[in-house]
Length: 174
Image (tube, rainbow, N blue to C red; front, top):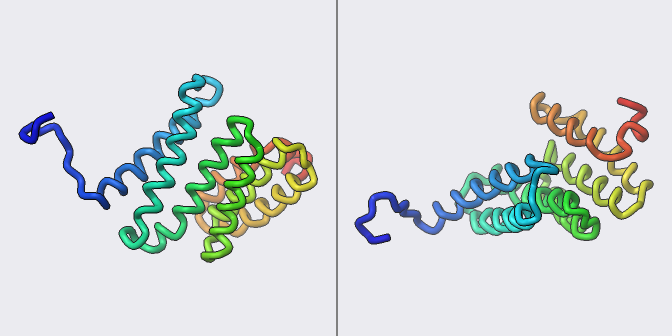
């Protein structure tokens, strides 16, 4: 491309990080949503996209509204944990669930973000065969979901919790 090519998009560094943080995050979710239709190459792309998005969000501290940025690291680790769980890697899913929860606790992040951290723990412990810890996090997520003020966020978070293996057993079909 030449400098005179009008199809080239010009970004400053911060604008580039904003663009890629959001677009790569959303692309990762598109791959997640493909489910069993994903190829092995798309599985790798999904993992790399989750990690790349987290990197770009990290670079935005002080450049996006505090309330948005304060959740970003927890949400990033949540997405990475989710991807590792989908790929069957319980250890890495657990490591990133821990990072998400630690960020929430350290920075006072609650609501759906905190509930999702517990959902990721539950999925990781399911993969690792620890049903007691899985059940503990299912119960914790259920309690946190009841406190989510936005109906859409609450409904979506609950639908994700209900996808955790063992949910019906733990919650008695709730």
